[in-house]
Image 1 (cartoon, one colour):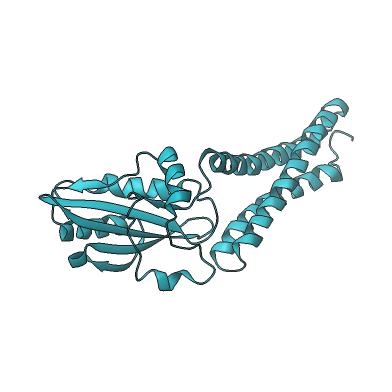
Image 2 (cartoon, one colour):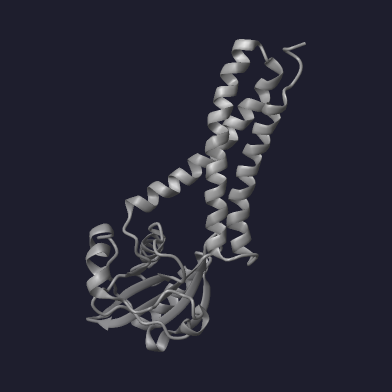
Length: 247
């Protein structure tokens, strides 16, 4: 009977693991769909992490007890609790590790001396958004040390052609085009992250240089201190897809 009867605490632990998963998803998706702000979303993630950690420890201890006492009926719930809790902690651990591996900045530009300027995007950012000013003294050294690959790119095509190509690249990457002015060598767009729905604004500038153009890209997060390297990765992806033939 002891082996076939499931105990309440094994079910309780599985419910705890399910709750941790639910808080993880709710924190991210609730923020994305505007149910609450990102601060509350992060609070829900933190609560989910605490519940997952407690559940994981208790589930492992419960597994030891179940093995010793022959509570075979509880083992399925305990395994589920361990797996789900570990998934939550593993996912959040990866995000934490990534945050610690990059500087806590969110304003990235290929040109740190004369960064591309936003125009139409400014009206979309809102009063609570991060400032758009690029503070060279505060940002440049950290950015150049962390992302040396983020730098201007020369193309053997006129600026207008480079901007047209950049617009196509941005659209292919899923960004929303806010404004495009090839004649003046500028295109602005907004990227929306998958989980939290955070918005990062992007501007691509092309200036005449020799027989072609020099292209600079800037990407700035609207909220948050650290971007987990997302803006630099986005800029690198954009530059990589800009072709020398302008196609």
